[in-house]
Length: 377
Image 1 (spheres, rainbow, N blue to C red):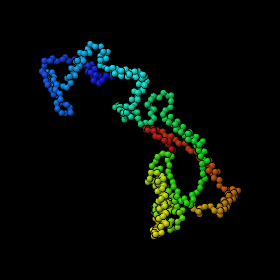
Image 2 (image 1 turned 135 degrees about the vertical axis):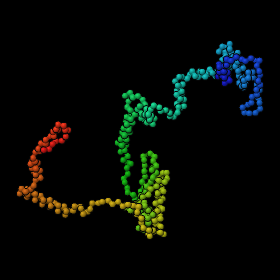
Image 3 (image 1 turned 45 degrees about the vertical axis):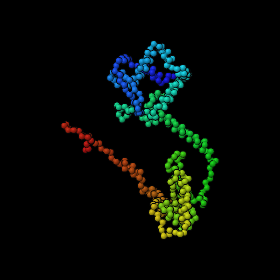
Image 4 (image 1 turned 90 degrees about the horizontal axis):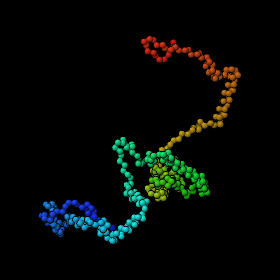
């Protein structure tokens, strides 16, 4: 390929100035040009301008004029052969052959890749000036936007596809519950209550593989009576626990979420319980002069059914005899005809009612407005 200098010459030749060359019998002005980086005057040039300030590019004009005289009567092929060397022509031929082997499809793919790489991550959409609150603009943050493309009634909407995907997920879990869950029965183990050497009960929280800040929390519960302590030592342990002691259930409950993992919090709680037991067994100070403070716990009174109201066997026999006497009394009154039948009494009262008299209607006099409602006489 042509060098940068020769390419610049060709470009300058194509846009050369059409101004005539000035005559040589003009005033000569000698100008000294200083380098850009400073220092001494290196070059002195001579200019033939008529009172105009010379420039350091005046020698280019003379070169362009020489090239114009040289290539004016030559053919374009001869000009190209003179400007481009043999090595440059060979390199240009190889490049042309390589470009001929590349198809249009590959070129378009390369252009698409370059266009995608230069495209911004999110296109800036300018709101319309005539729109009110941008109601005519599409919501870029909306997951399902059915208005983005014209719906040809040949497919379901995005919301319907999402609902169908949810239905597929439910069916997948149902198949797991039917075919795979029963296989876990062979790994089932019978429940064994904790032994005496296992007084601590730990509780963990899991969110089924999802990260949650409360997942690292561990809770431990234990009863002071499970450590084989004396009555004085148990009371001291309750006093050391403070507000973590529940007097209704006789259980001490503590939790920890200071560390990042559950194993670390569990180990911390186990060591803390061990320290409490060691302090409770210390006979130097039994805390007998300190009362057990239970102000932190509020006892909830649950109303219970009174025992006096419960039906005993004697009370049930008494009620049965009373009902039997009432039934015999009603039977005796029925035979004597003194038993009052409530249904017959109500029927007689309904039959004895007089029919309601008709009500006359109001008649408006001439010159008066008609009044609503009937006129009772």
